[in-house]
Amino acid sequence: MPKESPVRSIGPLERAFFGRDPRRVARALLGKVLVRRTSELLAARIVEVEAYLGENDPAAHAAAGNTARNSVLFGPPGFAYVYFIYGNHYCLNVSCEREGKAGSVLFRALEPLAGIDEMSHARGLIVRDPRDLLKLTSGPGRLAEAFGITRVRDNGCDLTSARSSLWIGSDGFRAVNICVTPRIGITKAAEERLRYVLGGNNFVSRTQSGNLMRLSHENRARS
Image 1 (cartoon, rainbow, N blue to C red):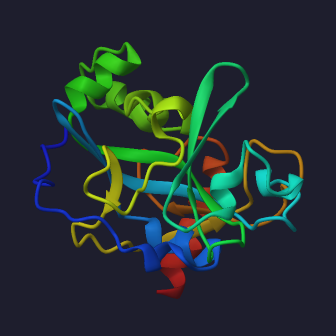
Image 2 (cartoon, rainbow, N blue to C red):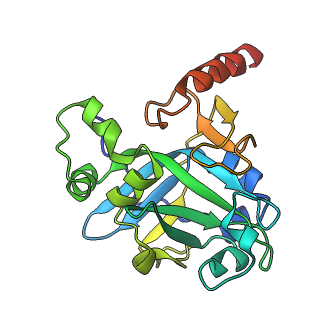
């Protein structure tokens, strides 16, 4: 079981952090901390993300153009874009690029740091050992449920503001052994290598774990 992390002193990332190409933002987000302020502080380290490149990316929601549903993607950077998928779970994204140019990063997996009891309750799980802990936030639907993320509650939320109940900060953690793989769970532009993960982290989603393991070894060999 991990120890509760001293995250109360963490401040949100600046908006300029997100006002870049989604590929740069995705890589830089690894190791940062997603924070939810409720009656109990929830915090988890970002260990797996995917970049979506805007209107010219067939797999991106922005490919449909600016609509009422996806307008957050075309607004200022650093805001939450939440959508409902498969009729059973929400997915959290953050808007990137300058205002008027769409781009985003999807959060795929987190490593819990604080508020584990509340996350477990939200997921309807009992955490008895480290194997149970892996089920909390490994996967976009699981992490959204653990953090109580919904479209009504969080779509359009400013992830750069400490006044928001949901935001992203840094505790000084330095991400190493970053691996890049094709995106997963999609059919369009699935071959694009736009999934970024912390190699060797147990909370990375299991899909394509064999490919990830090979990439981890390659990265270590080059370092």
